[in-house]
Image (cartoon, rainbow, N blue to C red; front, top):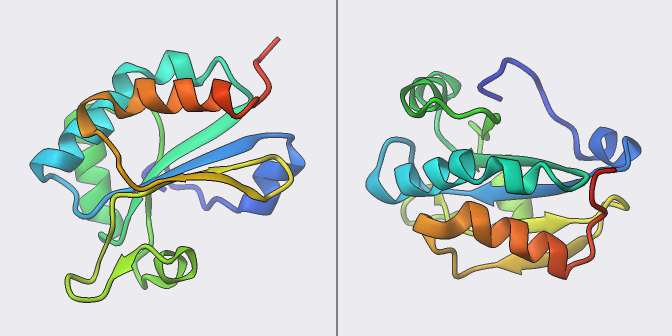
Length: 141
């Protein structure tokens, strides 16, 4: 992650957290800038839930770190530099060697609750918060 940490789904689940993993194609492009900015701007809405949330791409760590700093994001952007995780999630577009813009909602038990394949970059943060509520993800007390 851009915060220097390595994240593991099972560790997050052990903490009782749901996980949102929002894949994007390339750092510092217009759509990805809108999506990651929306996550930053609506982060308070997402933090109202027992959730860990991330955006992720196949970009190198240093590219995502520069991108995160440029946007001033307050959450980790993850780098899947060998594309192994993107392949496992089925989001890798082999023609572009980049992730598709899909968002995964994963329950505290590690099971996928929903996949959004029609992400609206401008409103994605608010859309995620709304979806967390619809999925019944626990609210923070």
